[in-house]
Image (cartoon, rainbow, N blue to C red):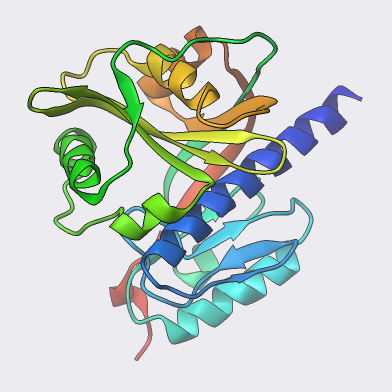
Length: 245
């Protein structure tokens, strides 16, 4: 039974993260495809987002076929989020970027939103939030989070505002059974996972569990906040220069 529970948690984590990918692609006006086995898009992905995310541990054949299709139609570099570490993508010209861990926290007690944290609700505030996040976590010059994302009721951009902008923040995204936590940052590099967890927990009513993925120091901080590691995932990238002409 424990292994069945763990595998179901990983499936829910992967599905929630694909929900976030879909929302960000939609905010950019980009089309996508989704089945029970794989989410994908043949459009150029926003920075830090994959073109493929796997949703089923056993559907390797279907997933490899979709990844192979995308290698034939995408001229740009693109990445794959292998949510179950079941794919070998080296034969398709991919290299591994990193491995991380899905994490899970059951939410059985009510909590309060940390002082100073708020939900970003207008385009100007979102731009300030993204500037603060990018200054800490993103070397990209392109906008990752367009204002259209604010209209999605399943997405909450959260942050601790200061007189100069935002000093910390995160994103919460709601799925049917879980809420996802991502993009946790503090501009001064200080630990902020605990505040992000409390803010994300209160972003949506009826949340039963909080899920995310992380690695290295971020994973250590998450585990110290009560998360449990529930399974590995792997990020692959195929550089555009590897594409046959």
